[in-house]
Image 1 (cartoon, helix red, strand yellow):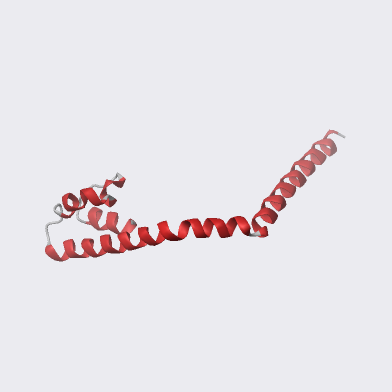
Image 2: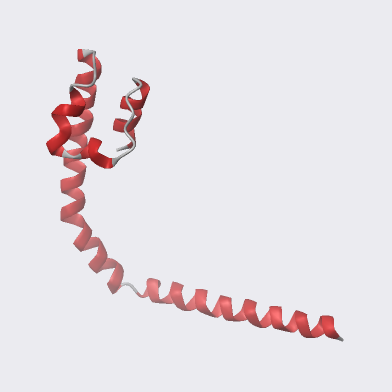
Amino acid sequence: MNRLKALYRGWGIPCASTQVYAARYREEWLNKIPQAGVRRRAELLYQQLDGLQALRRNLRPEFLAESRSRDCCTFAYSALASFRMEMAGSAGFREQADRH
């Protein structure tokens, strides 16, 4: 996705929004590119984007289900929580030591 925006920006065409990626505005954006070779490169980038978006739509539920089934996620969250409690406890210990 960044490559598409970089292509447009390289030709001095501002593209701050995500509209540049939308299929319904694609022809409008392609017509802003003056040279045929650069336009063809943009078309190929759009084809890659379409393929990757379809792949992501298909695989995302599978990856989310897999991540929920792993104990490593719960382990990581519990380790982070205990680390935070430990750090909070050691900060309190330092405050008490500084008072004496």
